[in-house]
Length: 189
Length: 298
Image (cartoon, rainbow over all chains, first blue to last red):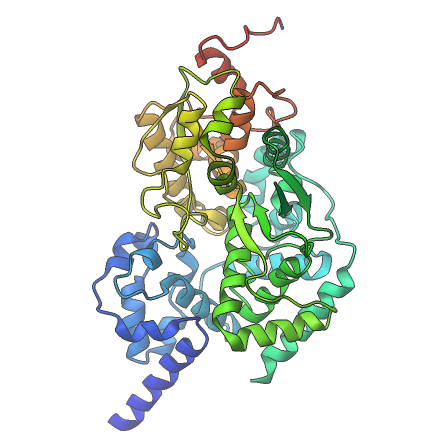
């Protein structure tokens, strides 16, 4: 039994390492906690990055992928630049986001919905679309919040800071061909 | 000096003041910017959260579209800057990723060899390539008397620290001193504004924004200058909502560093995009800068 668990542990850890540039640095974690202590969102996390790495090493796939840590991360990279072992903590968190989204393990967060809306605009137009993001995503997931956004949105609009229509790049076919191919290559593994 | 220019989506609309002032200031300093023809979105943090290979390929299309005559690419937005730089870096360091990204690019008839383009931030171009003497030479209205808090945010100074100190960056402090401003040295100048967190968890985002405004106010800043559209949007656009949430009365104007440069250079505030910020900056500048043009009769 113990052997089976150890093998499982390695499976998850190896998976994270394989999908993260320089992810192997994770093997050198000292559990010093500099990452969590440096994190502006540490107080909002169920598990700090330090705990997350410990749980990855312990093969606790479910706990890791359903943690809110990834969705509280603001990508400020303090953990990454301060880690004495040069572990790319922020990039590990990106890998965990991708796994959590792909397997729908996330709970109580709108972050994956926001990411999906955002990338859908990029795929369709080649540009992001702030107004569409602000309205579409808010109206779908949090209508009350959309209401509160109203006055601010109005101020932004009157100052010419909000476009009501998305911009489309000229060569959208080229971008879509690249995206299509990248997804195909990604699915190969 | 001529550079390829990647404005990024925010600068098209929400951060138009940044684009306007970058172009005005660049023009005056002899920095020639050639916009990448038909550039696409860098995917911000959202694309990397979903699909690394596609995110990298989407970004690499922009690098592949840079005019082969140009070796340097300037991006004013922190997120765009980091994504472009990171993509070039990752492709250079990981042969397998490089090969896959180029296979995807080939589907669009493109190719990118990592290292071909050096990705730069506008602040670095101004401070390192143009330099102190040339900047000082253009100052016609020194910002004497104005207490300016430089706000660096995250993604220009981290994770790649080669252009400044990732804990205590100093480049914008220096630039502001060249302009004659009183530079506010406050402890949170490279802390996070929350990025897209306003869209995910307002309590978490608002607290991060509050800390920055509070610290700048405690250190008696008249205004904050920033170098990223997301930072400007969070600190300026959300300032009213933050005040409502915490029952605070912050009234700190937030402008781009290129806007305040333009003021010191005597350029027309309208052409620099002043008036687009929600917390008006010009009244503070008029009131504080010694010898600034007397208030226009209104």
